Length: 204
Image (cartoon, rainbow, N blue to C red; front, side, top):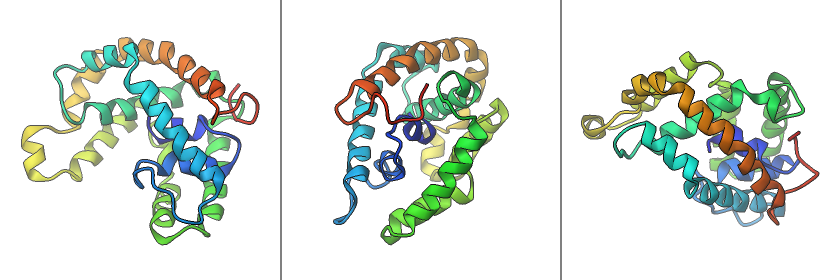
């Protein structure tokens, strides 16, 4: 799952949401005086990723994308945030634009008390409205090109993110069906997890 999904699969607490986002770039390591909510969000991120990586529907989606590649998981993460954006009203009680506006505002305010590196990560995410950048297929394909721009020339010889564009278009309906079957199961995993929540969240 990519960052939009991680913010949604969170308790109704901005530190928890940001912990769920920052777990990847900070490699699961919270700073010394980080809040308990942020630490719990980081742990939930790990549980979400573990559940996702082992799921048969995710394996099926990866097989739709073709041969194994190092970037396939990254591409699928972005694709799932695209599908989540398209089907947002199925899962969240708030309209997507309003949700993103409130999240970005709270994230900017909360991160002002964070150390430099996590603060910078959150500020870049908010300034670019990163979580709202996957709402159309064109947006998604553009995001794959942005990933390519950050790859080394050596990596590009072997694989690029945008090389998956054609197969995404060709397999779009099947990939969407996989997501629509998988995501409710992931929601149930979050709600039933000891670090998740059955009540204090933004989910329907």
